[in-house]
Image (tube, rainbow, N blue to C red):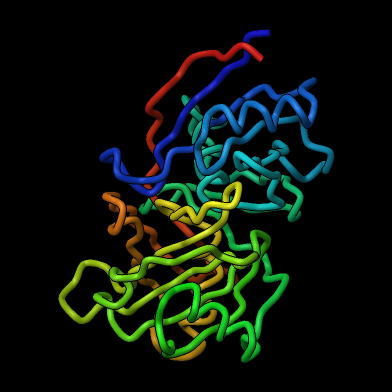
Length: 269
C-alpha cells in the first residue's frame, strides 16, 4: 500500500541537522512492520502518524529507532508536526504519544514543542557516575544529573568544549549519556551538546537531540549556569551543526528549531 511520506531535516536549514522519516498514514501497520521500516531507514528515528485516541489531540504518533519504540523524542516531534501541517497555516498542534499530550506551536525560531515532564531526575549515584566517567574516558566531571524524559538520559557537564570534543566513549553499558559544556562568551551558541546511545551493541552519537536538550534546560538554568532563552549547538563532532533554541513560557520549557522537508512522496508498506 502506498503511504504519504516525508523525510525532514530538523534543527537545521542547511542539511546539517538530524533527519527523521515520517509516514503520514500509519494506520493498519503492525508493530513489526513499523519496526522493520524504521530499521530499514537506518535513521535515528522514524515516525508513524495515526488517528488520535485522545479527543484533545490532533494526531497520534509512534516513534521508532532502528531497534526499539520510544515513548517520546524531540526531533521526531518537530519533524512530524512540520510534515503533518505542510501547506497549511496551522499554528498550534497537540500531539499524542506514549508520553502523553505534547503541545507544539510555530515560533520565530521554527516549530517548538513543550517539554514533557521528567520521569527521572536528581543526582547520579557514585557507582553510576564512576561507570559513566569510565565509559567516557575521563577522570571526573564538573557535575552530573539524571535528566530522563522518556529516552533515559543521564547528563554530565564537562569543564570545557575542548574536553567535550575529545570524548571517545566506549560501550555504554545500558546508559544513554548526554555530555555538555558551556561555551565562553562570543560564541553564537551558549551550550555545546553531545549525545550517545546504544544501537545493537554499538555506541552511536546522535546528530541533534530534542529530548535531551529539553531535559538539560531545567537542570542548567536551575543551577544558574544558563538563563532563558539560550541556544544549544549539537553535532559538531560528527560534521553537523544543529541549533536548538530553548525558552520558557506558560510555565513550560519550549524547544524550537528549523525544520525543512528534503524528501516527499510515497512509500510502499
